[in-house]
Length: 167
Image 1 (spheres, rainbow, N blue to C red):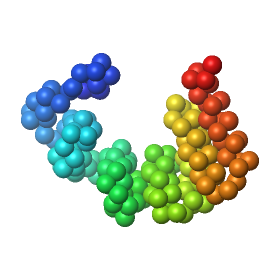
Image 2 (cartoon, one colour):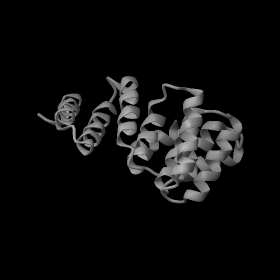
Image 3 (cartoon, rainbow, N blue to C red):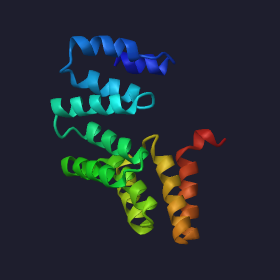
Image 4 (cartoon, rainbow, N blue to C red):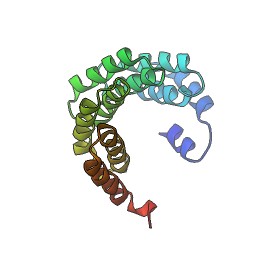
């Protein structure tokens, strides 16, 4: 938690998390948070900490989802899909894994399937800060499918969900 607070304050928690992780190598949250801090700096080291966190808590959806996004960022769609699907086996309603699968399907040109995954994710994220972005993503996919009216409705829903950004 301290690492997250430091990040919110604009500080880099890497050294602090490394020091604590050396003292408690079997701490799930230290490994997970250190992996998240390192993901942009050193992806291979980040992967090792994600694997350590998963070894401590096998089947944890946060780690499985993060692994999915790790591989998705590297365009390893097959590996990313495996992790998102494992995540959904643990929790079929885990919206972030569905959004990740939607991104894979979009990249593969499976737009109808991508739209369906985002629809399912939206059911879980309604009322959260992520909902507006998800509506926007669905609008983009619907536009690519050619359904301009449905796309317009999703774009409007995105604006409505983020009304504080659009005075």
